[in-house]
Length: 347
Image 1 (cartoon, rainbow, N blue to C red):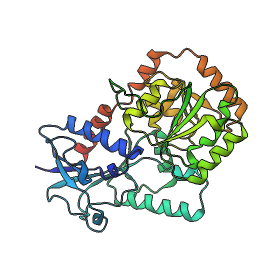
Image 2 (tube, rainbow, N blue to C red):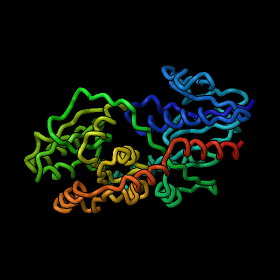
Image 3 (cartoon, one colour):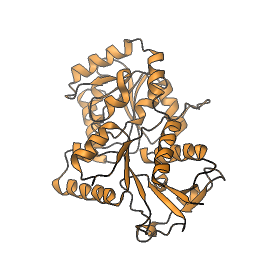
């Protein structure tokens, strides 16, 4: 029987979109694996072996595999889950499907040297690929505009959303007043420093959840909070696990996501599941993912305009029917079905 390997080495990075993508898609792929199809094998860190059930094989990740990665002799397809991967099957005869999640660096103010480095890594992944998948039409446009795809097919497969847990436990940090919520990595392209201004005309807190990747930028966020005299109401609560994340989304007054560049923007959909007002930027993929169910900050991020939009959104009557219809487009079952179709076309 032929073997299909799905590369899940990004499970090494908790609290990231890559981790969520690998874990959720792996579960859906296992559930939909055809009985008469190829044998599914998951390339995972040792701690995740067995995590997706006994019906699949596990290929253990090793850091040395960046130099030489042996694979089962019957491997007929390798699915690399990230354009950033350093792990490729050593045999060039094995077809490779590469998922490119974003081209965010093209939208950021980076040095010419850093941008050149990123372009080189992406182009290497494209050269190694037999076929390419990306996660939004916006990302596809970026790929086609900025890279030589060498005539290779570029498909769009949307990410899904995690189902709301049936029993959400309160986290250790429970706010004692109404709060606005932002969940993401704390770095400059997430644009969090525009948010403290939204506390100027109310008594809410702003909870900023996620790992701090740029300490200097975290200080800039606090300086902006001091400028608006709301420093005591801007609270960094660090990374949150899935159950905690859902509790905060369930109980927030609104979810804020002013990111400047996203390949998809999964937190937008996760917050919509709780029928919360969602406010995000109008950049890259976010209008595509949020559709008509989200309020969009103008790209200038003027404080007065943002404050007015927040007040308008908090008072709006959200259509649950429209939100449910929109969310139905983004499920991991649909994503897995689309991937299995591509796998079968490639094998």
